[in-house]
Amino acid sequence: MTDLHRLSIREISEGLAAAKFSSRELTEHYLKRIAKIDPQVRSYVTVTNDVALAQADAADALRQADQATALTGIPVAHKDIFCTQGIKTSAGSKMLDNFISPYDATVVAQGKNAGLVTLGKVNMDEFAMGSTSESSFYGATKNPWALDHVPGGSSGGSAAVVAADLAPFATGTDTGGSIRQPASFCGLTGLKPTYGRVSRYGIIAYASSLDQAGPMARSAEDCAYLMNVMAGHDAKDSTSMDKAVEDYVANLNATTLKGLRIGIPKQYFNVAGLDAAVKARVEESLKKLEELGAVLVEIDLNMTESYVPTYYLIAPAEASSNLSRYDGVRYGYRAENPQDILDLYKRSRSEGFGAEVQRRILIGTYALSAGYYDAYYVKAQKVRRLIQQDFLKAFEQVDVIAAPTAPTTAYKIGASLDPVEMYLGDIYTIAVNLAGLPAISAPVGFDQDHLPVGLQLIGNYWSESQLLSVVHQYQQATDWHTQRAAIAEENA
Ligand code: GLN
Image (cartoon, rainbow, N blue to C red; front, top):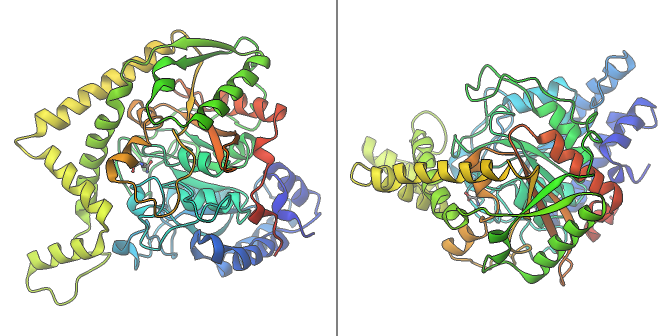
């Protein structure tokens, strides 16, 4: 078969079960595509050919022995922030360019247990700080819809591999939009689960109170399959929740759109930088949801103006603490010929970290320093609580909240936004992380340059199933999620 890369996860699962093709054939098919097409997209940092083929053979053997799960033998790409035993885990940084993890992240281990095949590790903004994937030590990944545009970030590689059909689905992480925004820029579906739903163990930490991993794929259905593998309690992550996991695939039709109350925050649609085409596509998608039975309710989210300043204090503060472990001593980049221990620390860190990471460390250290702690960090924590309360109040009125995922479509590579401009692009995603809520981005059309636009739906705590179900039903009635970039049509 030449078009294996066009199959949905359910179709792959059924094809494997019916022995229409083997995991070996499927994996070889993807590896061939990666070899041919990835030099243009530049999404993989590491392709694990040998590991993938060995895992594929093992998956085929399990299937022969009747021990396969729904996902046994299906290839996946992991964001290069998930530790993978014996395989480089760089977090997109020179600091970890030589780092081979001695253990697997829980998400990776759960994938292996389910029989997933690891195609490789994909590019990202350095330490997940950024919205374009350009801050990676390995250079910019290209947006498959327009190769001179960014795929978004920080999980830009995860989005690009799926949009170019170089993996059927991928893992991502979202600290402040890093699953949803690249999904939006690349015409995909991406779910950021409730904080605590997916284990953070073995994920290189950015801002621990905000970090959460989730699936990125073409459709809500494909995301549901990966979410079934990723979700769950993990004793190794004290912030993971000991709460039964739902069957996200079985629940895809569980929520009815009839009477579903969708909140439309007034403040969100009056944001200065909101692109007209984005606004139009999002409004059209809401109209469609209304046709399908949903009820649109105007709501207030009064804290909107505080999102960016609050996030850009808390996230850098936590980052400055998390990144203090990279000192050139135990692992990671080490400066050559240090004169003394201070010189070793200083040079390892200034040579090993890129500019954006250094900027965040400076901001975060400042905000946490004795003289400014109350004025900045403590204040930001208080505002964070108000933001959360604002959402909880809204959820007394509505079932889900709709918003654009990002105010614009994908930027041009090298657009060299100044940092504040780039931070403002996170306006619609970061409050969700501050509140710990789940949210999903789904494709709802294109702008005048045929760049994808995403609709975001924010749910109450633990409503992943509902979000996937709402998007699934929207996707049953529309075909934005099935449209492919030209490069994805190419055959290997
Ligand atoms: N743009 C956000 C930031 O740079 C995205 C972070 C993320 O979700 N990893 O902080």
